[in-house]
Image 1 (cartoon, rainbow, N blue to C red):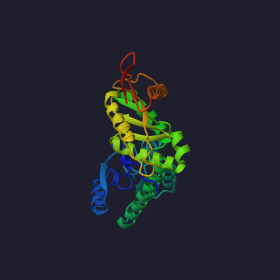
Image 2: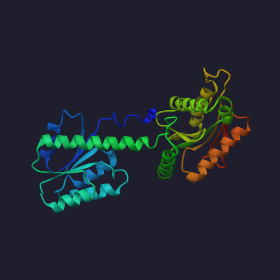
Image 3: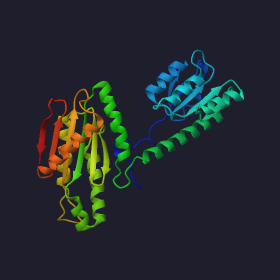
Image 4: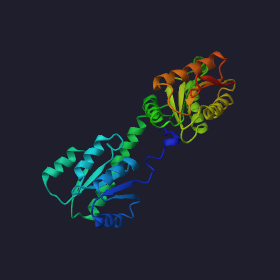
Length: 321
């Protein structure tokens, strides 16, 4: 079984957070006391507006939502949650004193996973909560595994494409530093031709482990395709990214391959980053890093070439080898 990237493994190990949205203080107190042994963290909101704001801010594992609240009622909260990309997949169990089939139908049509009427039996609610959390955990695991490269255990190209768009948009809004590194194994075709594809696969798997070890907790290492990899580094300047990139380059170059003692693997790296407002579109940024990768190849391979896009005009920051 392919392991998850080490930086993003603990989806199934995280302690679930349950957001209780109800205008009754007694309901909050009762649920927290009776569910205290369920290994859950609780958040509380007493109005629909407060509940929606907390859901968007904290992204809980599960919401327990009252329907009948002053101001924004439960159905309005549910509708807003399902319209927002950050909360549209959050499971919601509706609590309601209403027994109207119309309310139940409306809640389920808006995406509620369960509907419990007041007064409720705590044992039954506990089972429903466990079931909703287990289903959400399984869905999250499947969604995550769909974004994993089967050979290396790194994130795959689809995951990178989505996260790169998100990080570039975040930079555009807030001006946080951001750097991208594109890496390509040197002369990898010779490895497959000389030692066979099983050996080539073993090399790619080893490179995946090197990237996981050498990168930082916040970095996102992805297999871009074939023998090409990318490292997305949020909140990282070009200069700091060079340190990470050099660590990776040196680790690859110094690797020993016991089954093929004469084998030597090196990697070329192109880096492009900035510390302020986005100077290029997301696509142009990738092109800039890719140009640096080919500059590293032309320089003799086993090199790192980095451009600080914050400097106008862009200039070469480092060429190492």
